[in-house]
Image (tube, rainbow, N blue to C red; front, side, top):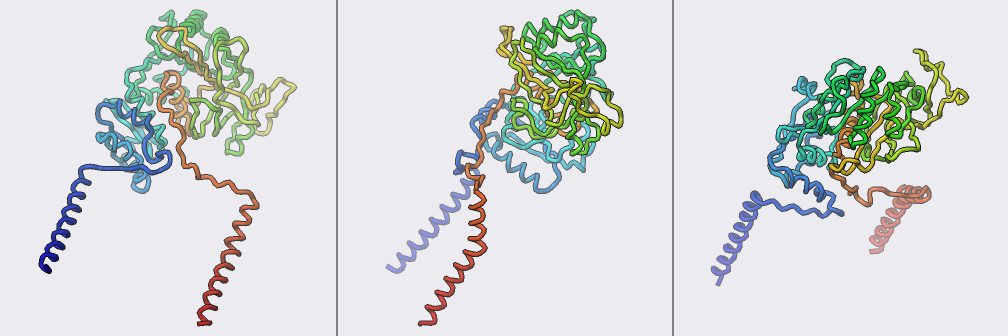
Length: 448
């Protein structure tokens, strides 16, 4: 009997060891993850999972980050995507070890991600599920978008390297599937068919009547337009402004609040917050606009116009010429017709498209073109804002609209009285309670 009991014990131990080995073997080949957080905050949203299902083929993510905690954060973030898409690979590049590649890609932020899929690439400077899934969706869409840049009247060149040109910005858009084409109305009488977007960037001379009629006709046929205008830059475009229902206000927009940010030139408009719009949803970067014209809506317009760029309360439209010592000379003068801020200088317009080929027609008018120029593109979030504007104009804003899924109990709302009671409770009440308990225990032991 004793031998049988020992044998049963050995068999039980062997069975437990075999079960443990089997579980270890299976765990190496089959992963099981369970998310017990409220609202499944630790898992990908259904919208993100749907984006991954559209991607046929490997995706490479290159992270430019110095060795340290940031790499661990990026790895943990991407692990949720890699569980659903095993051919999504991640590699790290030390920015200090490869400065030439950093300059070529325009990477200036530690932690920048470059996503590559089927020869196309997307760049991210922020790490969030919405931005990452949106980048994957843009890669999945593919297809080349034709963007025509109006030329011939002193506009900013799409391939130019001068400070005022847009060459750097356009070069960073090309890997995302955008193809820039020149549009000179001395050689063409209309915007070519299949053009996805026309960019009119700060013309310096008056456009011919035929060019203005071609642009207005392009709008009437349902085309999308990005118009970058400047203070005093009418250039014979009054019919185009009337077709959009937008008016360029006289003067230069100045902001007295810029001095608090270290800006000596009042014509430099720095923005850190933006009116609500899909272009600026979740956008937290600061942008800089060197010389701005304020804009206003007119009543006669079929467009739904929403401002997404707005100056501060200490801004106004300065009508007098600004000298180098403007800091001490300019003053707000309502008697001269100057307008007090906040003033809008960026409008996003949309309406039902007259074209049967698409549902919505879009246009953006901004009272400054310098913020996307080679000289100012690297300031703050200028490049990121420009990319968002182009994405919205091309219809790529309807990508991944993730609802907020934060923890419901992250904020503790207490009154001053409640805070005072908590403070006295921890500083006085709790020590007195511990002393009382200690005294009670001491007294009982003495009586024994």
